[in-house]
Amino acid sequence: MDITFIIVIFLIGFIGSFISGMVGIGGSIIKYPMLLYIPSMLGIAAFTSHEVAGISAVQVFFATIAGVWAYKSSGYLNMRLIAYMGGAILIGSLLGGYGSEFLTETQIDIVYAVLATIAVIMMFLPKKEIPYNPGDDLDFNGPLAAALAFITGAAAGIVGAAGAFILVPIMLVVLKIPTRVTIATSLAVTFISSIGATIGKVATDQVLYGPAAIMIVASLIAAPIGAKVGQKMNVKILQWILALLILGTSLKIWGEIFF
Image (cartoon, rainbow, N blue to C red; front, side):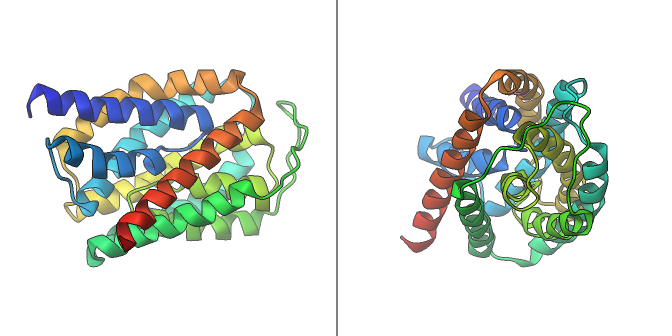
């Protein structure tokens, strides 16, 4: 690995992890297309979709640890919601991570694009912000939360994501969870999901450990900084940042698939 390669991969990891910590996602929605296209455009590497998914899975595992740590004293981590969604998404992501070995590059990209499209539609649906103070009781449908988490985990495990980019709009729109609770809790659920996705990718030998190590270092530095910034930002701004990121990624991936 030359120095240019290391710098480019580090910057991709840093930028993606800063944004992911800020808006409560693992970051694959951002880093997947960046890893797929930027190194290739610069002529320093050409990763396949399987390799990008493998790198993303390992990196998200560490990025979410750092993000959750930054939120540990915030009062917005809801343990009951984490319990319902965490176990279901772990099983789903483990199955998706293993199953991805049998899909083609194009099929993986299509799964990713479909997830991003669903997520962006949900992010732009009108939603009413629910008042919440740390320590308040949270009312939600537990079985529905678990079922949606399982489906999300299975689909996200295929693309090496932990699924937060679809999990966040599900929590906001369907389960009607307050935004700051969604951001903090989704990081914890995403961490659990990333365990399954990472095991699946490592077990099927889809991980390039050099680039993954560089991304991990960048994540551990950037994700906590992003989380601290996110705690101070207006929730509407956070929602719009995430929605626009998902929209841009969705359009880019669909464009590559069809054209």
